[in-house]
Length: 264
Image (tube, rainbow, N blue to C red; front, side, top):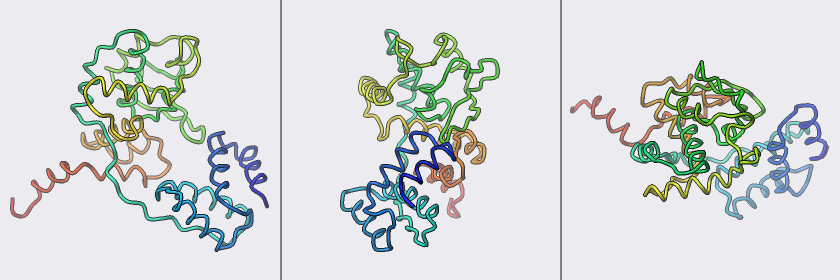
């Protein structure tokens, strides 16, 4: 058994994406052997931790290696590390309002703002939004058809307000593209969104682009949306990740406590 054979089968038999292939390759680079013993696997985790990888980053690599071990028929498995339950980074309501009121100048700034508003309105991943084509936008039924992880398509609703903005922007090909019609680089978009936040007078939240997804999810639940419906909208395969959004901000918990306290 070898890493190369495992990746070849995943590529041609399971039809995983190039991003998944890269994830396997990067994860296996931490292993010193293709037939690891229990000691080798412990060393694999220790070296990642010594290099400064956080528990979440290590668990990402551990999932890839465990998939390989199962495929290879190995009796060994690596237990996941305990991850700290951190408050997810989000945009505040004040920051969202500033974005909504912003009047961009020029095509590039208008396109950038529309990307941010699409992320906030739909909860889509940045890769899903940048991959949208004109035929994926159903203006009549207010639905986007996005391609998520594992090349899985799903329907995502959007608002009347976003439809107004999309109507003015839509053309053939990619919804968001360069003037030459090529796909936008997500790293360039990230840089420009951070600059826009600073221009509007606030520090962008950590994981800025993904924070729009967290913001959408928390707002969805605050307004009474179902966790099960949220799972479908976000494209999560299990409820595990979606449930994290149910751990709302401290002020939400405080408000609930004030209503339910025996002393109130």
